[in-house]
Image (cartoon, rainbow, N blue to C red):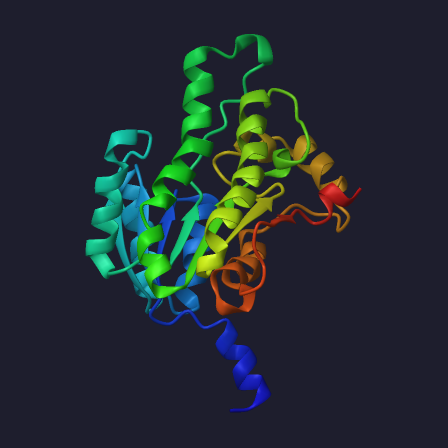
Length: 259
């Protein structure tokens, strides 16, 4: 085998089963599509059935393999059953991407116990408890990839982002703790922390031309993110190319955090 073929094989996900939460739109949908294009078989998990069906159809139309599972991950007691549905759909899971999340954008004085718990639960607790459902199979096969989705707020603060920022800062530490717990068994755990990308969560930014331009100028490259900017890192962290990388947070932000 040539050196070029060996390098190419590092990124080949053929036959790997990947579960992506929040896969019906935005960053989760983009990451799922990248894995499918690299050969993975996808289980897409999200609440909104119509959008989920659209995301699944898009992968199928490109020649990939994907099934949809509609589920509300905020129902904590249902997580084991959702995980079992994922396994029954396509077999043992090798890759989990935790992209489901919310950002309520509340001033600190307006955060209630209910909104705090809702944010921390979906953004921080669910990635741990849902992922843990797949660890036994990954340990048996001595291969697993966990990709959590962080944020610029994993490392810095924004106005009206106290609860969200706490959850995304927690994701970076959760990733390190997951790596410590599981990487000796071949399970690599990393976080992708996107900058400003056009998604439903960032609609308040991209709906205002002045704000959109201002945050673009805060990057080193001078523009905001395009969803395809996430493809390379997603496949890298999901593949054998990342065999010796774990517990890390990679900001994909055009240099926003570098300035």
